[in-house]
Length: 202
Image (tube, rainbow, N blue to C red; front, side, top):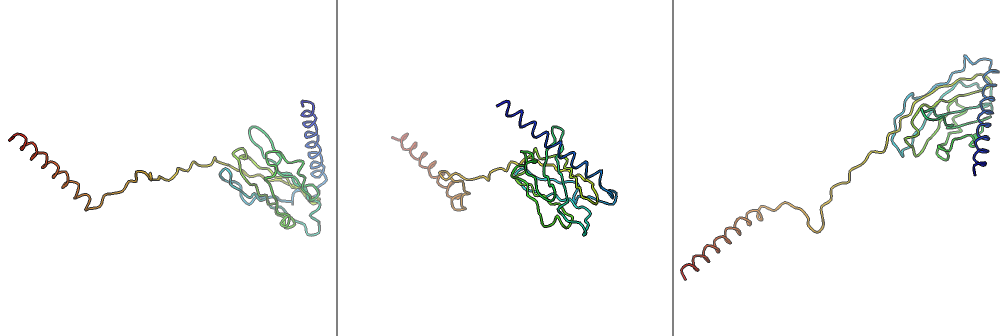
């Protein structure tokens, strides 16, 4: 079991190194990185646990180039760890690079990629998803990156509505009942006095 874990760790590290060198090669071979711009539609996001959210980046497009040469690597940076959120290589998603934290929870819109938009949908948010999201975009006509911040708060405790007991329901007495209560008490007191008087006389 330990050997398998060590082997898996080595394979994952080798994949990350390979991704790094591929992306570095694109940066070095890009001829016009300065004119290539990557932006975020929103710099800061606020969401609640177990909800869904959409993160979006935009980048400079070149109509003379195909979207098949677009490479993206989106990662989450926290004080504790670094996780791969999403990875595209030659316009094709690479789920093997994705961290287990996001497995099965990230979807992307393929149709808008050709428009220069990378839109990611993250479902069933966790508090551990909070952090800095950095997305690097690499093309043959430029490369750049942009970051945004996401803060996921714990789900709020919702107090349950108060329910009245069926065996002992509480209700306000009607005006007739409120008047009847003092009258009945007065009659009981009168009967007690008459009874005591009759006993003394006897």
